[in-house]
Image (cartoon, rainbow, N blue to C red):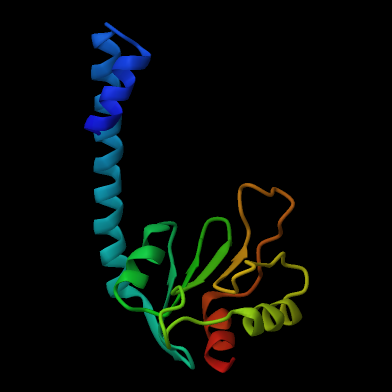
Length: 156
């Protein structure tokens, strides 16, 4: 934050009120990030753990996107989050780490076969499989529930 404040002072010299408002906005955003992390820790405790051929995995039905990164940091190889409001699904794996990591291509193919009306996007790395995003309003969320998605991930 201090580096940003120095930059703002060069961009907007002698605007002390702006510096204070900017600083407060940044601190408020940081508080929200801390709250989301605490909330994510609670969600992870309630998450549905399962095993894939790549290693341990966990699934959630939550609007909190922080669970994805935090669960990966906790050692889960595959992490699934389904947004209960919009129905969107995000599946992420650890980046390649020697023997860890996974390729979600088979999951992508299976999910497209089971739910052909849904819009699925497989990242070129094979490490991220997405269904739904606010960036593409034409995307159709999957009709599959979290349990259905987990069953696919367990079998591939």
